[in-house]
Image (cartoon, rainbow, N blue to C red):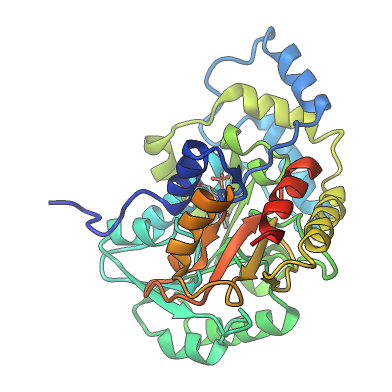
Length: 375
Ligand code: PMP
Ligand code: GLN
Protein backbone atom coordinates (compact mmCIF):
# COMPACT_ATOMS: atom_id res chain seq x y z
CA UNK A 1 0.00 0.00 0.00
CA UNK A 2 1.40 3.38 -0.99
CA UNK A 3 1.84 6.01 1.70
CA UNK A 4 1.35 8.69 -0.96
CA UNK A 5 -1.16 7.13 -3.38
CA UNK A 6 -1.90 10.34 -5.25
CA UNK A 7 1.67 11.48 -5.75
CA UNK A 8 3.09 11.12 -9.24
CA UNK A 9 6.30 12.44 -10.83
CA UNK A 10 6.51 16.19 -10.28
CA UNK A 11 5.34 18.43 -13.11
CA UNK A 12 8.80 20.06 -13.17
CA UNK A 13 10.46 16.72 -13.91
CA UNK A 14 7.78 15.74 -16.43
CA UNK A 15 8.06 18.99 -18.38
CA UNK A 16 11.87 19.15 -18.32
CA UNK A 17 12.05 15.56 -19.55
CA UNK A 18 9.59 16.25 -22.32
CA UNK A 19 11.45 19.43 -23.28
CA UNK A 20 14.65 17.38 -23.65
CA UNK A 21 12.88 14.67 -25.66
CA UNK A 22 11.50 17.18 -28.16
CA UNK A 23 14.54 19.45 -28.08
CA UNK A 24 12.34 22.33 -26.93
CA UNK A 25 13.54 25.51 -25.21
CA UNK A 26 13.01 24.77 -21.55
CA UNK A 27 11.24 27.61 -19.74
CA UNK A 28 9.45 25.11 -17.47
CA UNK A 29 11.43 23.95 -14.42
CA UNK A 30 12.92 26.88 -12.50
CA UNK A 31 16.68 26.95 -12.97
CA UNK A 32 19.07 29.42 -14.60
CA UNK A 33 20.97 28.46 -17.76
CA UNK A 34 23.72 31.09 -17.58
CA UNK A 35 27.19 30.50 -16.11
CA UNK A 36 27.76 30.66 -12.37
CA UNK A 37 29.80 33.60 -11.00
CA UNK A 38 33.46 32.83 -11.71
CA UNK A 39 34.40 34.02 -8.26
CA UNK A 40 32.41 31.07 -6.90
CA UNK A 41 33.77 28.48 -9.33
CA UNK A 42 37.33 29.71 -8.61
CA UNK A 43 36.75 29.21 -4.89
CA UNK A 44 35.46 25.68 -5.52
CA UNK A 45 38.46 24.83 -7.71
CA UNK A 46 40.89 25.99 -5.06
CA UNK A 47 38.99 24.37 -2.17
CA UNK A 48 38.88 21.04 -3.97
CA UNK A 49 42.58 20.67 -3.13
CA UNK A 50 42.17 21.74 0.49
CA UNK A 51 41.06 19.91 3.59
CA UNK A 52 37.29 20.40 3.29
CA UNK A 53 36.14 16.93 2.37
CA UNK A 54 35.01 15.37 5.64
CA UNK A 55 31.82 15.66 7.66
CA UNK A 56 31.06 19.10 8.97
CA UNK A 57 29.33 19.41 12.34
CA UNK A 58 25.73 18.17 12.07
CA UNK A 59 24.02 21.58 11.86
CA UNK A 60 26.57 23.06 9.48
CA UNK A 61 30.09 24.33 8.81
CA UNK A 62 30.71 26.89 11.58
CA UNK A 63 32.24 29.64 9.38
CA UNK A 64 29.25 29.42 7.02
CA UNK A 65 26.86 29.55 9.95
CA UNK A 66 28.35 32.76 11.27
CA UNK A 67 28.28 34.31 7.77
CA UNK A 68 24.58 33.45 7.47
CA UNK A 69 23.97 35.05 10.86
CA UNK A 70 25.70 38.19 9.53
CA UNK A 71 23.65 38.10 6.33
CA UNK A 72 20.43 37.77 8.31
CA UNK A 73 21.52 40.75 10.37
CA UNK A 74 22.42 42.91 7.39
CA UNK A 75 19.41 41.95 5.28
CA UNK A 76 16.73 41.97 7.96
CA UNK A 77 18.20 43.42 11.14
CA UNK A 78 17.61 40.12 12.93
CA UNK A 79 20.19 38.77 15.34
CA UNK A 80 20.27 35.00 15.48
CA UNK A 81 22.37 32.62 17.48
CA UNK A 82 23.75 30.38 14.73
CA UNK A 83 24.49 27.54 17.12
CA UNK A 84 20.92 27.34 18.36
CA UNK A 85 18.71 28.76 15.64
CA UNK A 86 20.25 27.82 12.30
CA UNK A 87 20.51 24.66 10.24
CA UNK A 88 22.23 24.19 6.88
CA UNK A 89 20.03 21.99 4.70
CA UNK A 90 20.27 20.07 1.45
CA UNK A 91 18.23 22.73 -0.30
CA UNK A 92 15.09 24.45 0.88
CA UNK A 93 13.23 21.25 0.04
CA UNK A 94 14.92 19.46 2.92
CA UNK A 95 14.35 22.40 5.24
CA UNK A 96 10.63 22.24 4.49
CA UNK A 97 10.38 18.46 4.78
CA UNK A 98 12.43 18.25 7.97
CA UNK A 99 10.56 21.06 9.69
CA UNK A 100 7.16 19.58 8.91
CA UNK A 101 8.25 16.10 9.98
CA UNK A 102 9.65 17.43 13.24
CA UNK A 103 6.78 19.70 14.20
CA UNK A 104 3.50 18.34 12.79
CA UNK A 105 1.73 15.47 14.56
CA UNK A 106 -0.94 12.99 13.52
CA UNK A 107 -4.32 14.66 12.86
CA UNK A 108 -2.88 18.15 12.99
CA UNK A 109 -3.96 20.47 10.21
CA UNK A 110 -1.57 22.42 8.01
CA UNK A 111 -2.86 25.34 5.97
CA UNK A 112 -1.46 25.57 2.45
CA UNK A 113 -2.38 28.47 0.17
CA UNK A 114 -3.24 27.53 -3.43
CA UNK A 115 -1.72 27.82 -5.95
CA UNK A 116 1.03 26.17 -3.96
CA UNK A 117 4.47 24.72 -4.59
CA UNK A 118 4.48 20.94 -4.65
CA UNK A 119 6.80 20.28 -1.69
CA UNK A 120 4.37 21.19 1.05
CA UNK A 121 1.60 18.60 0.97
CA UNK A 122 3.47 15.28 0.93
CA UNK A 123 5.42 15.75 4.17
CA UNK A 124 2.14 16.69 5.87
CA UNK A 125 0.53 13.47 4.61
CA UNK A 126 3.53 11.45 5.77
CA UNK A 127 2.90 12.81 9.28
CA UNK A 128 -0.67 11.45 9.05
CA UNK A 129 -1.74 15.04 9.36
CA UNK A 130 -4.24 16.87 7.16
CA UNK A 131 -3.36 19.50 4.57
CA UNK A 132 -6.03 22.20 4.35
CA UNK A 133 -5.71 23.86 0.96
CA UNK A 134 -7.10 27.41 0.91
CA UNK A 135 -7.31 29.33 -2.38
CA UNK A 136 -5.68 32.72 -2.77
CA UNK A 137 -7.83 35.48 -4.26
CA UNK A 138 -8.00 35.79 -8.06
CA UNK A 139 -5.25 38.42 -7.93
CA UNK A 140 -3.21 36.00 -5.77
CA UNK A 141 -3.44 38.08 -2.61
CA UNK A 142 -4.23 35.97 0.46
CA UNK A 143 -7.89 35.90 1.44
CA UNK A 144 -7.37 36.34 5.17
CA UNK A 145 -11.10 35.89 5.87
CA UNK A 146 -11.07 32.43 4.28
CA UNK A 147 -7.76 31.60 5.90
CA UNK A 148 -9.13 32.48 9.32
CA UNK A 149 -12.22 30.36 8.69
CA UNK A 150 -9.94 27.44 7.83
CA UNK A 151 -8.13 27.76 11.18
CA UNK A 152 -9.19 25.70 14.18
CA UNK A 153 -7.71 24.27 17.35
CA UNK A 154 -6.32 21.50 15.14
CA UNK A 155 -4.28 23.92 13.03
CA UNK A 156 -0.58 23.43 13.72
CA UNK A 157 1.05 25.28 10.86
CA UNK A 158 0.37 27.73 8.07
CA UNK A 159 2.77 27.72 5.14
CA UNK A 160 3.44 30.99 3.36
CA UNK A 161 5.63 31.36 0.29
CA UNK A 162 6.87 34.89 -0.18
CA UNK A 163 7.84 35.83 -2.95
CA UNK A 164 5.39 33.35 -4.37
CA UNK A 165 5.97 30.53 -6.81
CA UNK A 166 4.29 30.38 -9.32
CA UNK A 167 2.50 33.75 -9.24
CA UNK A 168 5.36 36.15 -8.47
CA UNK A 169 3.21 37.84 -5.81
CA UNK A 170 4.75 39.26 -2.62
CA UNK A 171 3.16 39.85 0.77
CA UNK A 172 2.49 43.38 2.03
CA UNK A 173 2.60 44.99 5.48
CA UNK A 174 -1.21 44.70 5.55
CA UNK A 175 -0.92 40.94 4.96
CA UNK A 176 1.41 40.60 7.94
CA UNK A 177 -1.04 42.54 10.12
CA UNK A 178 -3.79 40.10 9.16
CA UNK A 179 -1.51 37.16 9.84
CA UNK A 180 -0.64 38.58 13.25
CA UNK A 181 -4.34 38.88 14.08
CA UNK A 182 -4.97 35.23 13.25
CA UNK A 183 -1.90 34.05 15.15
CA UNK A 184 -3.00 35.96 18.23
CA UNK A 185 -6.13 33.78 18.31
CA UNK A 186 -4.24 30.50 17.86
CA UNK A 187 -1.23 30.40 20.17
CA UNK A 188 -0.08 26.95 18.98
CA UNK A 189 -0.14 27.82 15.30
CA UNK A 190 3.32 27.93 13.69
CA UNK A 191 4.32 29.63 10.45
CA UNK A 192 6.58 28.05 7.86
CA UNK A 193 7.82 30.86 5.65
CA UNK A 194 9.31 29.67 2.38
CA UNK A 195 11.44 32.59 1.23
CA UNK A 196 13.65 30.95 -1.38
CA UNK A 197 13.17 33.95 -3.72
CA UNK A 198 13.83 36.47 -0.92
CA UNK A 199 16.41 38.42 -2.93
CA UNK A 200 14.41 38.39 -6.18
CA UNK A 201 11.87 41.21 -5.91
CA UNK A 202 11.40 44.18 -8.17
CA UNK A 203 9.50 47.46 -7.66
CA UNK A 204 8.43 46.56 -4.11
CA UNK A 205 10.84 45.34 -1.48
CA UNK A 206 10.50 41.86 0.00
CA UNK A 207 9.16 41.83 3.55
CA UNK A 208 10.69 38.88 5.34
CA UNK A 209 9.21 37.00 8.28
CA UNK A 210 12.60 37.71 9.90
CA UNK A 211 11.58 41.36 10.31
CA UNK A 212 8.37 40.66 12.22
CA UNK A 213 8.73 40.44 15.98
CA UNK A 214 5.46 38.58 16.40
CA UNK A 215 6.87 35.76 14.26
CA UNK A 216 10.31 35.32 15.77
CA UNK A 217 9.21 32.79 18.38
CA UNK A 218 6.94 30.74 16.13
CA UNK A 219 8.22 30.88 12.57
CA UNK A 220 10.50 28.61 10.58
CA UNK A 221 12.09 30.45 7.67
CA UNK A 222 13.50 28.58 4.71
CA UNK A 223 16.14 29.96 2.30
CA UNK A 224 17.95 28.53 -0.73
CA UNK A 225 21.45 29.27 -1.99
CA UNK A 226 20.37 27.47 -5.16
CA UNK A 227 18.05 30.37 -5.97
CA UNK A 228 20.19 33.20 -4.64
CA UNK A 229 23.47 32.14 -6.30
CA UNK A 230 22.20 30.45 -9.51
CA UNK A 231 23.34 27.02 -8.27
CA UNK A 232 20.11 25.01 -8.01
CA UNK A 233 22.01 21.76 -8.58
CA UNK A 234 24.13 22.22 -5.48
CA UNK A 235 21.05 21.63 -3.33
CA UNK A 236 22.03 23.77 -0.40
CA UNK A 237 20.05 26.18 1.72
CA UNK A 238 19.28 26.92 5.32
CA UNK A 239 16.51 27.07 7.88
CA UNK A 240 16.19 29.49 10.76
CA UNK A 241 13.88 28.87 13.69
CA UNK A 242 13.74 29.76 17.38
CA UNK A 243 15.70 27.41 19.61
CA UNK A 244 12.70 25.47 20.93
CA UNK A 245 11.63 24.58 17.37
CA UNK A 246 15.14 24.18 15.97
CA UNK A 247 15.92 21.62 18.68
CA UNK A 248 13.19 19.40 17.27
CA UNK A 249 14.09 20.09 13.64
CA UNK A 250 17.70 19.05 14.28
CA UNK A 251 16.54 15.75 15.78
CA UNK A 252 15.05 14.82 12.40
CA UNK A 253 17.87 16.36 10.38
CA UNK A 254 20.53 14.30 12.10
CA UNK A 255 18.92 11.07 10.92
CA UNK A 256 17.71 12.29 7.53
CA UNK A 257 20.93 13.93 6.33
CA UNK A 258 23.29 14.29 9.29
CA UNK A 259 25.38 16.99 7.61
CA UNK A 260 25.22 18.72 4.24
CA UNK A 261 28.07 18.28 1.75
CA UNK A 262 31.17 19.98 3.04
CA UNK A 263 32.73 21.55 -0.04
CA UNK A 264 29.57 23.49 -0.93
CA UNK A 265 29.38 24.82 2.58
CA UNK A 266 33.04 25.88 2.58
CA UNK A 267 32.74 27.49 -0.86
CA UNK A 268 29.58 29.44 -0.06
CA UNK A 269 31.11 30.55 3.21
CA UNK A 270 33.94 32.26 1.31
CA UNK A 271 31.68 33.50 -1.47
CA UNK A 272 29.47 35.31 1.05
CA UNK A 273 32.44 37.63 1.71
CA UNK A 274 32.42 38.93 -1.86
CA UNK A 275 28.91 38.53 -3.27
CA UNK A 276 26.22 41.21 -2.94
CA UNK A 277 22.79 39.59 -2.71
CA UNK A 278 21.20 43.00 -3.13
CA UNK A 279 22.12 43.03 -6.83
CA UNK A 280 19.96 40.01 -7.58
CA UNK A 281 16.64 41.86 -7.75
CA UNK A 282 17.90 44.33 -10.37
CA UNK A 283 19.46 41.52 -12.38
CA UNK A 284 16.21 39.56 -12.60
CA UNK A 285 14.13 42.70 -13.04
CA UNK A 286 16.12 43.25 -16.25
CA UNK A 287 15.29 39.70 -17.36
CA UNK A 288 11.61 40.10 -16.48
CA UNK A 289 11.36 43.37 -18.41
CA UNK A 290 13.23 41.99 -21.41
CA UNK A 291 10.97 38.92 -21.57
CA UNK A 292 7.91 41.15 -21.25
CA UNK A 293 9.15 43.33 -24.11
CA UNK A 294 9.91 40.34 -26.28
CA UNK A 295 6.37 39.03 -25.82
CA UNK A 296 4.65 42.39 -26.21
CA UNK A 297 3.19 41.59 -29.62
CA UNK A 298 2.32 37.99 -28.85
CA UNK A 299 -1.15 36.68 -28.07
CA UNK A 300 -0.10 35.74 -24.54
CA UNK A 301 -1.33 38.04 -21.80
CA UNK A 302 1.38 38.45 -19.16
CA UNK A 303 0.29 38.84 -15.54
CA UNK A 304 1.95 41.17 -13.02
CA UNK A 305 5.20 39.78 -11.57
CA UNK A 306 6.54 41.35 -8.36
CA UNK A 307 9.24 38.81 -7.58
CA UNK A 308 10.72 35.33 -8.30
CA UNK A 309 11.95 34.39 -11.77
CA UNK A 310 8.60 33.20 -13.01
CA UNK A 311 6.15 34.87 -15.35
CA UNK A 312 2.51 33.74 -15.45
CA UNK A 313 0.79 34.13 -18.81
CA UNK A 314 -2.74 33.57 -20.06
CA UNK A 315 -3.21 31.78 -23.38
CA UNK A 316 -7.01 32.26 -23.33
CA UNK A 317 -6.80 34.25 -26.59
CA UNK A 318 -4.97 31.39 -28.27
CA UNK A 319 -6.60 28.11 -27.30
CA UNK A 320 -9.44 26.41 -25.41
CA UNK A 321 -7.27 23.47 -24.45
CA UNK A 322 -6.75 22.77 -20.76
CA UNK A 323 -3.40 24.02 -19.53
CA UNK A 324 -1.71 20.60 -19.27
CA UNK A 325 -2.66 19.74 -22.86
CA UNK A 326 -1.66 23.23 -23.96
CA UNK A 327 1.80 22.87 -22.38
CA UNK A 328 2.35 19.46 -23.96
CA UNK A 329 1.34 20.80 -27.38
CA UNK A 330 3.48 23.89 -26.83
CA UNK A 331 6.49 21.59 -26.56
CA UNK A 332 5.51 19.26 -29.41
CA UNK A 333 4.27 21.84 -31.92
CA UNK A 334 6.14 25.02 -30.99
CA UNK A 335 9.33 23.93 -29.22
CA UNK A 336 8.87 25.81 -25.92
CA UNK A 337 8.29 24.23 -22.49
CA UNK A 338 6.26 25.88 -19.69
CA UNK A 339 4.45 24.73 -16.54
CA UNK A 340 0.63 24.47 -16.34
CA UNK A 341 -0.66 26.45 -13.36
CA UNK A 342 -3.50 23.99 -12.61
CA UNK A 343 -0.92 21.61 -11.14
CA UNK A 344 -0.43 24.04 -8.22
CA UNK A 345 -4.08 23.63 -7.13
CA UNK A 346 -5.58 20.71 -5.18
CA UNK A 347 -8.61 20.69 -7.52
CA UNK A 348 -6.42 21.19 -10.63
CA UNK A 349 -8.67 23.98 -11.81
CA UNK A 350 -7.83 25.10 -15.32
CA UNK A 351 -7.63 28.85 -15.85
CA UNK A 352 -5.73 28.84 -19.15
CA UNK A 353 -2.60 29.98 -17.34
CA UNK A 354 0.97 28.79 -17.70
CA UNK A 355 4.29 29.69 -16.05
CA UNK A 356 7.48 30.62 -17.86
CA UNK A 357 10.88 30.71 -16.14
CA UNK A 358 12.84 33.76 -17.31
CA UNK A 359 16.09 32.87 -15.51
CA UNK A 360 17.71 32.33 -18.90
CA UNK A 361 20.38 34.04 -20.98
CA UNK A 362 19.09 36.59 -23.47
CA UNK A 363 19.67 34.37 -26.49
CA UNK A 364 17.40 31.72 -24.98
CA UNK A 365 14.73 34.26 -24.08
CA UNK A 366 14.89 35.71 -27.61
CA UNK A 367 14.67 32.31 -29.29
CA UNK A 368 11.74 31.27 -27.06
CA UNK A 369 9.92 34.56 -27.56
CA UNK A 370 10.28 34.28 -31.34
CA UNK A 371 8.50 30.93 -31.24
CA UNK A 372 5.86 32.22 -28.81
CA UNK A 373 5.12 35.27 -30.95
CA UNK A 374 4.36 33.00 -33.90
CA UNK A 375 1.54 31.23 -32.07
N1 PMP B 1 10.35 26.49 -2.43
C1 PMP B 1 9.99 27.04 -3.59
C2 PMP B 1 8.86 28.00 -3.62
C3 PMP B 1 10.65 26.72 -4.76
O1 PMP B 1 10.29 27.28 -5.91
C4 PMP B 1 11.71 25.81 -4.71
C5 PMP B 1 12.35 25.41 -5.99
N2 PMP B 1 13.56 25.55 -6.10
C6 PMP B 1 12.08 25.27 -3.45
C7 PMP B 1 11.36 25.62 -2.34
C8 PMP B 1 13.18 24.29 -3.31
O2 PMP B 1 14.42 24.88 -3.25
P1 PMP B 1 15.78 24.01 -3.24
O3 PMP B 1 16.13 23.74 -4.66
O4 PMP B 1 16.77 24.84 -2.52
O5 PMP B 1 15.46 22.74 -2.52
N1 GLN C 1 11.41 25.06 -7.79
C1 GLN C 1 11.49 24.64 -9.16
C2 GLN C 1 10.31 25.20 -9.94
O1 GLN C 1 9.37 25.70 -9.38
C3 GLN C 1 11.48 23.15 -9.31
C4 GLN C 1 12.44 22.36 -8.53
C5 GLN C 1 12.17 20.90 -8.71
O2 GLN C 1 12.08 20.42 -9.83
N2 GLN C 1 11.96 20.23 -7.64
O3 GLN C 1 10.35 25.10 -11.13
